[in-house]
Image 1 (cartoon, rainbow, N blue to C red):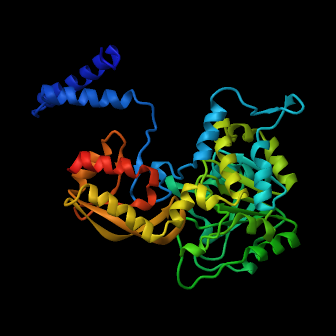
Image 2: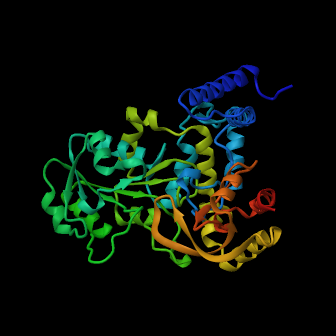
Length: 426
């Protein structure tokens, strides 16, 4: 008996036959019967497999946006399964037996990690920024350095986000230089906040001047307005010891005096897609009560994964448990041992070469990590075969070579990479 429903196969066959007839009618060459059968089976297989599918990321881009960004820890995956297997205490207080708050599962963890008074979580960082501006700055002015009116992936721009929230953007300074006096001179009775936007996906080099967050916080207090810090990626761990550029830490922003700090939960934090806002309690409470909050809230599965991820930081085990930081911290000698095993499995068809990995995902722009690569002859042809495997393996193609980087591959996936290579090129 066919594993595919007959009506699905019938529709796919008719579509391919129609395509073949159209090609012939316009003077082209239609597909042969074997090609049509192969096409139908391939499309049916794709259609009837639940997605997104698991793939192995051998590109060397640790936070690969197209491949789902941060892989989750084993504990986070288990927490998601536990929360989704049946019912859960999403909005139920087990002590009192009454309705509870879904944010209680992560709020105390976030406050302990950041030093903030309160916290809430939403769909992603952009949602957090829109919510904060809508609640606190609608029909008012928000002052941003001209060099920070950035665009993030997908064409989303800070000026557009502000416009949708109802806030008015006031740009100060120049692309490369902004001073405290620029902010001070722009403050009017209609100013709601100063806002710092971290340039998480680009870096300006050369003659530049910026204003320290502590100075902005002092100015905001003096003029009795808010200071909003959009950190983009967000980070709890100093990346400097790994040879990477320093990334602003959330806890440092809170300590410096930011009224609110917005950041992602699925980049350097290493959790599921989410946005986090931490800061002053009265501001968080206003956001929590706003109607937009219901449209932006997290579901139980992502709340469980985020909670498990935050616990790794609280327990001091982030480097050992969170895949993103395991990958960043992997020593070159360990990566070399792994690629040697990969290469020996398909000896004679590839070689080892030096390379560079990147963090990616709009984090630590321009920063690279040394790595060892397996270079496979055949380039695009081999890359396509690996993508079509039972467990797709994704690499990068350069100069007719397929390059596979172990840094972005979980060690427990090495066996699958080897089997895929054997099936493809041996």
